Image 1 (cartoon, helix red, strand yellow):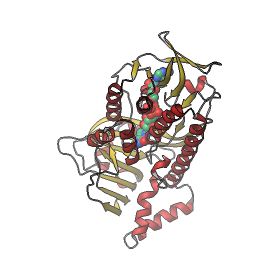
Image 2 (cartoon, rainbow, N blue to C red):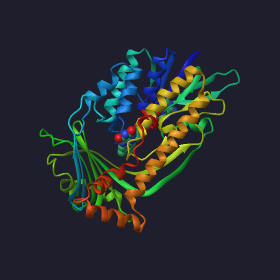
Image 3 (tube, helix red, strand yellow):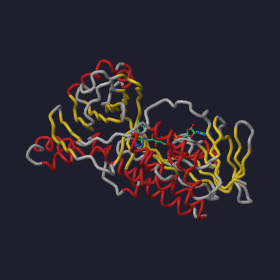
Image 4 (tube, rainbow, N blue to C red):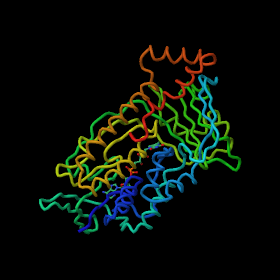
Length: 381
Ligand SMILES: Cc1cc2nc3c(=O)[nH]c(=O)nc-3n(C[C@H](O)[C@H](O)[C@H](O)COP(=O)(O)OP(=O)(O)OC[C@H]3O[C@@H](n4cnc5c(N)ncnc54)[C@H](O)[C@@H]3O)c2cc1C
C-alpha cells in the first residue's frame, strides 16, 4: 500500500509530493496531462518570500533556485490619470522579498526536485475515481485501469477538481461580473526597467485601471474592464491599445491573451468525511490574482497537508487551512472592493487621495497598496 497518492501535478501537487517525500512517505503522483505538455493560459508570476522559504524547507536550495530564475523589481509606481501619485525604490537585497517568474518555470524546478527526491510520478493517466473504504484505505483508479491503495490522498487537481466532486465536497462562493483582460508579452533584446506600475484611469486605456507587472523575460498587463465593456473585443485586438499602455516595451511580442473574472470560492470542507482525502490549492479555494495568494497559499496547503498525513492529524489541517483561505478571501474582497469602487464615497476618497498625494505621501501609499488588499503576515498565506 502507498502512503500517499497525490492527484495533479500543478505547482500544488508537485509541492505536496515533494513535501510528502521529504517526510519519508512513499509517494505516488498521478497527473492527467502527458509530461512536458505545455499548459495554455496566464498563471502565477509573483512568488512570496515565505513561499521561497517553504520550498527550501521541502527541498534544500529549491527556493534559491526559483529566486535565481526570477526577477525582483526595485521600483513600484502608481499613477492617476497618467500623473504619478506614488513611487518607491528599494535597494537590491541578498534575500529578496519576492520574485516574479512564469509559473511554468516554478513547475519545471519542482518536477526536477520531485525526480531527485524519488517521487514516483505517472503522467498522461487521469484519475477517474477515488473511494475511501472501511479498512482506512483509499482506492484510486485511473483512466488506464490502474488502481492504487493509499493511506491518504492529497487532491491538488485544480479548480474543477474531479476528486472534490467524487468525495462530495462543494465549492462555495461567488464570481464577480467585472472582467479583466490579461496579456502576457515577451520583451525584445532591450529589457525595460523592471518596475511594477499600477495605473488608475490610464489615459491610453480609455481611463480603465491597468496593472503592469514585469517578470523575467516579459511583462503581464492586466486591464480592468468597465461595466458594459466587451472584454473579448479588447482582448481580440491588443495591438490597438498595448503600445500606449506599455510604451516602455516598444518591441513587445504578445504571447498570450485571456479574459478572466475574479472568483472567491472555498471548499465546504478541506477533507472528505473520513479525513483521508485532503484538498489543496485550487481544488480547495479560488482566489483573485491580485494579491498573489492562489499559488502561494496552495503551496502552504501542500506542505501542511504532507505534515498532517505524517502526523495523522488531518482534521487540524482542514481547520487551519480553511481559516487561512477565509482570511485570503476577505483580503481579496477588500482589494476588489477598492478596485471596483462601487460606492460614491470610495470614488470620492480615491480622487481626494490622488489630489493630495503630492503633499501627503500617505495618501499616495494608500492608493498604491489598496489594490492588493490588506497585507497578511506571511504565515497566513
Ligand atoms: C492570470 C492569473 C494570474 C495569477 N497570478 C498569481 C500569482 O502571481 N501568484 C499566485 O500565488 N497565484 C496566482 N495565480 C493563481 C495560480 O495560477 C493558481 O493558484 C495555481 O495554478 C493553482 O495550482 P494548483 O496546482 O492548485 O492547480 P493547477 O495549476 O490547475 O493544477 C492542477 C493539475 O491537476 C491536473 N488534473 C486535473 N484533473 C486531474 C485528474 N482527474 N487526474 C489527474 N490529474 C488531474 C491538471 O492537469 C493540472 O496539472 C494566478 C492565476 C491567474 C489565472
